[in-house]
Image 1 (cartoon, one colour):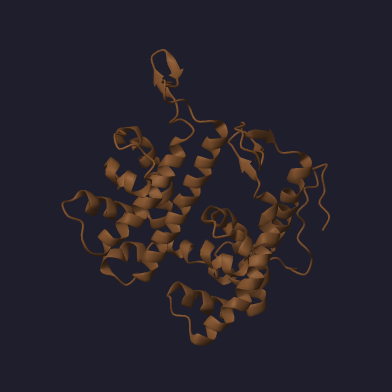
Image 2: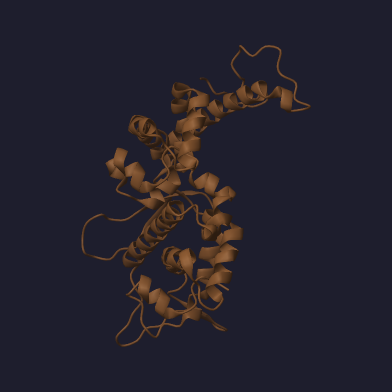
Length: 331
């Protein structure tokens, strides 16, 4: 069972689709979008609860109000997932495309634009669903989400959405997928730059109030000062890897002409050492900082970690080099 079961629901969220489209052609992709993406945002328990409510007679209350937000995300993500294989068919003889007197396969360029649009709208739908949940977090219908580990992640930073990030870095342009890709860099920037300035205790109290939607007026006035710095540090640490993609076989760079009306294939090439160098440098810097954070945490909490023996001298820098390796890093 899924959260989308008929073509009318699909057409309501994406009107370009033909009214006689068979929902079974999208069924496996809907399942992928829900199980592989949506569950990571709302939690397995709450997802199961929503599926049960939707497939029972007459979904009502706040769950009924939330459903369109979830369906929007799922439908766009399913269409995105289907784009790489939905354009061809499979039979006993192999793979084929259908060509008629009035229809022909879409070009690579148009297909790429379709994929980008559906991916962005899908992730924007996820953010909108989370915003609706947060706006109604005290409702009994949403208790499974309110107590989930996924909510801790969704509300775990000083900036938690693309719309909010865009207030402080306008070139983000509200891109929910771009913000999703930058969340690791954002969390790192918080730990490296923001929390040391605020102090661990005060930072924790702010984050607790963000999580509980209970910032005081004074804290609300403070947040822009925090977030202006945080947004720019996030871009500084995350920008170098934005144009790179992991395709399962390596790291690639994808490109296509930005102007012109002609249709051309999307170009994919292996990332060059020069393109990888900034990402490697940033990753090494982040790793070294996180290693020091780990050491500080272990020392500060040694009493509650049986078996851990604090080092006798914590004044020296950590050595990240392997004496048996021919490569050495210099900080």
